[in-house]
Length: 216
Image (cartoon, rainbow, N blue to C red; front, side, top):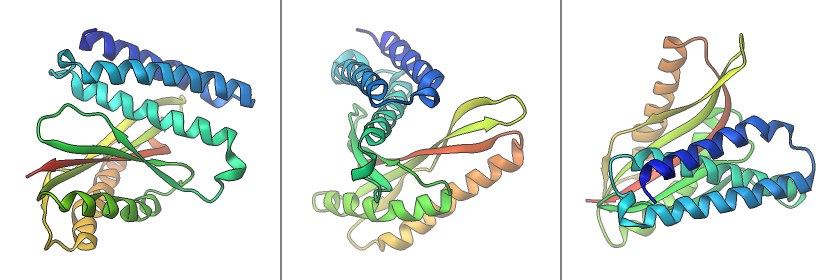
């Protein structure tokens, strides 16, 4: 399977889910789409693990995969809502074939509406993952915030992504200060700049914060 096919499969799956997800009501409907998402994610994951997938189109495929995994988590929690009412975030590892990448993971948002609150709550999970990887290597880390935006005048929706550049973390780094300077401040500034530049778009839903941990 080539990357163009993986791109098409994952993109079409996202379009399909977006078209129907707000109209799903019953547990059986959620379960049907959970099964569908699992099949698509398995197909994309197998493709990523093959050598043919590690070329120029991979970034788009990885992005699609993170969106599909976020939908899968949220659909599962719709069925198990009574048992997960106190959970706000979930970490998931994401397959990656970027050279030098130690780990890619997403912190999926379950119910938070405010970007500042979401970013602050992400720090605990972020710090745990970073501390674990620091045991074996200095790191270069960047993040990407993903949200679903809407134009209220015509109900057009689109995914928007806001990323930071790689920055170094070592055992002497104060993680809380690093996170405030390199993640919190920069992502919030990008969100504010986007709102001012493209005032027609409004944040509809926070999807996830993707964390890319690279060897130094």
